[in-house]
Image (cartoon, rainbow, N blue to C red):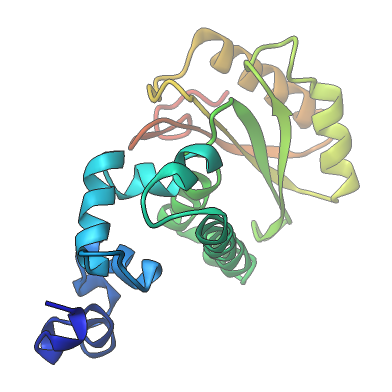
Length: 225
């Protein structure tokens, strides 16, 4: 049976408009994105098949272009649409965080960093540069690759902080392995950066390590010197 023949209350688009997007299942949300099904399948049927094939909604959203476009009902056009939607979501959250007092909410900071870093296939060391009121000035992905004292250069971090006229920083990096537990190198470079920034009166508020479904805060664990 085609979706337009379903009861109005069960159609994904109508359900979203009347009950809100959080009332929809993963398959229903994906079906709205797909818009149409394929021969012998409604958009809902196709969405369910894709969720099974990829292993879940997150795996679809974070799949490579090659893997995404090979799946039935998908292709380059859908891939570009999806990337645009995800980038708009990231930019929306970034703009939200620039508003006064938003960085007083640790949950908002965590959500922003998770969106920026969790899906990355390589290790990225980033920083939130903040003003004296702890409002966001800019988010900058500074270094790429394994995080250690050889790849993260304190002098460059200090220079960027001065260029942005930052009064405080929050560091973050991801572990593509999915294990968020900080390494000895993570702890060492954080201490080195703190000492370098302290020389120019810039405070390090926290360092977050993002894994798969977990985020660890150095501040909460009492690891900031």
